[in-house]
Image 1 (tube, one colour):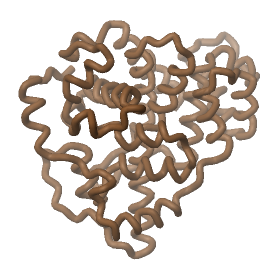
Image 2 (image 1 turned 120 degrees about the horizontal axis):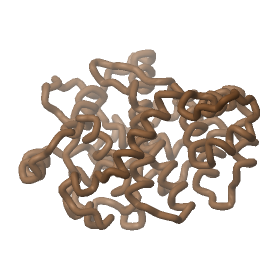
Image 3 (image 1 turned 60 degrees about the horizontal axis):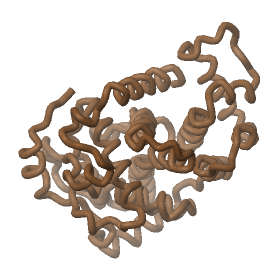
Image 4 (image 1 turned 30 degrees about the vertical axis):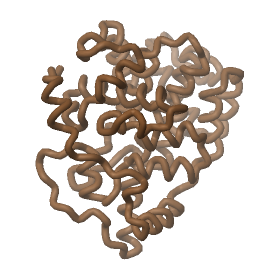
Length: 315
């Protein structure tokens, strides 16, 4: 596990600021809007799952009904419950039993992840920009956010599940945009030389001329997702670079939870240098006390490792 010098972290990494919506050249934004409009629509059953994930009134039968509309999703759920992770003595082909054994939360994560994979694929590498492990990262962020909040409120837990899984969809969209630009003869917006030591968003802007938070927000709006989801996708890295007043107050807590969870998961994977640590005042919002070693408890580590085992068994 990496150990960061907090004074160094907060002084050295904040000189560069990521692009915001208002910073994108209007001509480039117009082209982006056209290209984003060409991206696939969210399948109806996946849209339903996103709504069910945050609905306290929804139940296993409703999730099963949505899953049954997609044989591939049924297969993914059955693969999860029949994996060595659960160690069933006899494999089951009963979807309702599988959902009962997995539990509501796990089923929603598996189903939602599968649905999004159908839209974007498993991942890719583009000039050193690697998204092949993105689904695992998103899953771990959802687990971490639920654990940090320690909420017994099922609606909040469902909301964090959804936000954690969706927060990085802009990264997939970036690649799709690059492919579309090539097909249409549009020159890439980002043509800066890449330095070896740049953060993740800086690398995206150098390669694509825009970062994944902007594109993720645009895609979520195209899909008709809630304002809350759009805001978290668009602002989830702001706490690493900007002051609190740059984030809409009504969505501040959700943005902070996802940002800090994202940073912790990167930290545990030895990738915390990809982005600056969020400023201390953001940890205060969640009543979390720095340094990170105080926050990364044994319970959190166990949940993260358990989640990694689960993901590895359903790939």
